Amino acid sequence: MFENLHPLVNILLLSLMASLGTGLGGLIASIRRPGRRSYGFLMGITAGVMICLAFLELVQQSIELSNWLTATIGFGLGAIFMFLLDNFIPHIRFDEREIPKEQVEFDDCVCDGKGEGQGKRRRQRRKFLNKAADDVDRSLVNTGLLLAIGITIHNLPEGIAVGAGYLHNPQFGVFIAVAILLHNIPEGIATALPLCKAGICKRDAVKVAFLSGLGEPVGALLASVFLVRFTALLPGALAFAGGVMVFITLDELIPTARKYGSENYTALGIITGSMFVFILTGVFGI
Figure 1 (spheres, one colour):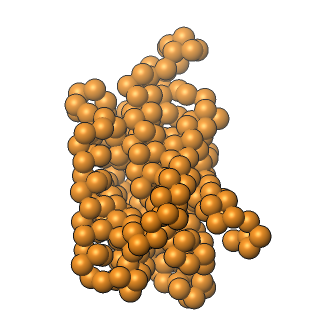
Figure 2 (tube, rainbow, N blue to C red):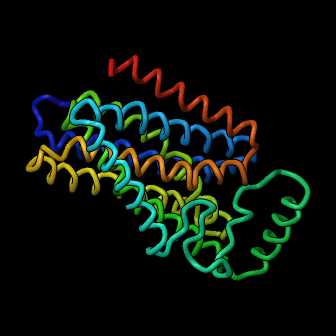
Figure 3 (spheres, rainbow, N blue to C red):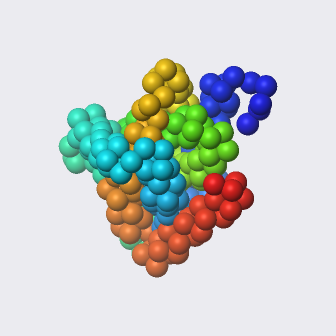
C-alpha cells in the first residue's frame, strides 16, 4: 500500500478501510430502509463475494503455497471455529439467533413495503409517538446491539484474511480488503436497521454500525503479529480464513437473503458479487 511504511502499519490501514463498510451500511440504513428486493440483492452480493474470495483465492493460494492437506486442515478448522463461536457466544448474526428466541425478534427489521409490513410500521409508529421522548423499544435495541456483537465477533477472523493475504503478497492483501469492504456494507445495514426502528438517534445507529466493524483491524493485527514470527503457518491461515467465510455464507448470509429478500434478486446479487471478484482479480492481476 505504502512502500515506506512498516507492513503491520499497512495491514492496519487496509483492515480499517475494510471495516468502513459497516459504517457505510449503517449510513445507508439511516437514510433509507431497504425493501425486500434491494435487501436480497445486497445480501446476495456479499454472499457471492465471500464464496468466490474463499474458494478461488484464499484456499487456492493456500494450496499453491503448501499442499492440499494443509489447505484442507486449515479450511476445516476455520469452519469449526465459526461453528463454536455461533454456538457458545450469545449474539445474533442476521437471521441466526444464538440466544433464546423469545428474548428478541428480528422478523420485521426488513420491510416488504406492503400489506402486513405497513400495518406493523403504523402500529410501531403510533406506539413510539405515545412514549416519552427518551423511551425506546428495548427489544429492538437489544437486537441491534447483539447484531453488532455478532458482526464484531465474525470480523475478527475475517481480519485474518487481510493480514495473511498482505504478508503473502501486498497486492493480494489490498484485493482482499476491497472485497471485504463490499461484504461489510450489508452487515452495517443489518446492525443499524433495528436500532433505527427502535427510536435510537440515526447518528448513534451509524456509530454502532461503524464500531462493529473495528473487529476487522484487531483480528488483522493479531494474526499479522503471530504470522510474522511463524511464517510457516501462513498457508494454513489463508485456508482458515476461507473456512470462516464459507461457513458464514452458507450458514447465515444465503438463508437470510432468501428469507427476508427476494429469491430472484438474491440470485442476481450472488452473480453480481462473483463478477465483482472476477473483475478485482483482473484489476489487481491476482
